[in-house]
Image 1 (cartoon, rainbow, N blue to C red):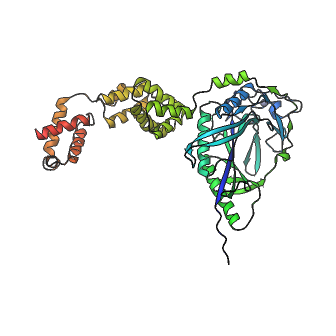
Image 2 (cartoon, helix red, strand yellow; image 1 turned 120 degrees about the horizontal axis):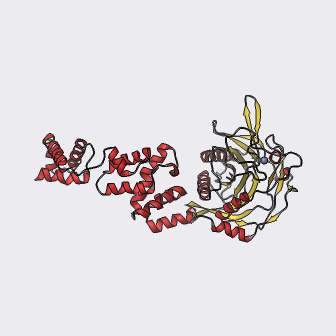
Image 3 (tube, helix red, strand yellow; image 1 turned 120 degrees about the vertical axis):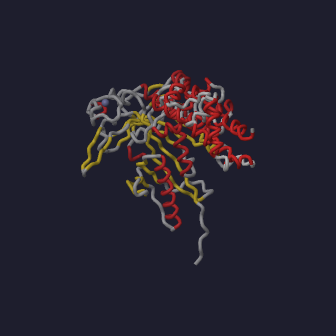
Length: 484
Ligand SMILES: [Zn+2]
């Protein structure tokens, strides 16, 4: 039996990300956009789809859409046109969703990823389009029945469609994190996957390496975290490969990811655009997007992470790892920059922010905005450490206390009794005691040239002084006391 030579397959991945906009009111009516309030309390004739109710466009939502488009280097359309996407679903009371079909608000953009392609250039993923639409309501399945909550119906969304440019589940994971990071700089969404304000569908196919034509595609839905996206893509690529290697054929379909069983299951055969019977929304006239408006929005964009990263590397000479980390969170990067305005030691301050500050945030599961330590207080602490009033260990303890109590560095150090008073007498007494105690062991070893023994003696003195001493000062003093 002849064995066919093994074909090497390449995945082709494209992601669609839905971003719920943080506007005060819904896309086409005055109902508030709010999470966690009683079901169906935020509804009106427009978002309930009652006959005769007419939609009005939310200007803020359009502006947020433009903001997203500009931040993703997109072209912005010259006019806004909405279309009806018709389908039936229990949580879609109108029987259609107002979306944008052939004229998306934003198109032809790109996102630069912090990874490199095979030629060593930064990997770029195209942004095919980003368009405005309204969200559907929510079906809640429980005890064999289904309840419908329409609070979410009509919430503004931007759907960001990435190009088929990603070649591995890991690249998809990086893309999502980078997209989320960039969107977080814009302040247009709370970007919570838990609350559903950030949702992702993944399209994946495989093709023999070198082949231009795309393979048969699966669309995976119900992905509740970026990790789930990565896992689902890995699973689906493996499944496709096995089917093709076994001589089988694939059909285009929509799948649901089962988070518990870690497998995909069919939801429906994939619908085509024609199934939705798109047509121009008759209740909304098209309107122009003046270039002055676009430029005004552009002028309000913050410094975006790609640019900030280069500046942090150039101006502050940070390691790439630290710079990428700091830039990853806009508020953290701003905390850092506020701190180094008060102390011109970028690397030293970065070590604190990346280290102890981050540890504290993770322990408390909070963002930097909620930390009870200001940049000025952090610098006050670092200055106490530099002045020898704290050592590396007590400085961390004091920082922890500051985060706990929300008090300044000196006040906290005093309160926790960690401040090193220059009590020469106590220090000398401790050294004398330790030397006497360990004269046969560590002291003798040190005399024989074992430097390690000095570290041990410093530790013993620190214990006697209850940590209220600077090991850097203790070392030479102990050496002097031993050697005379
Ligand atoms: Zn409403």
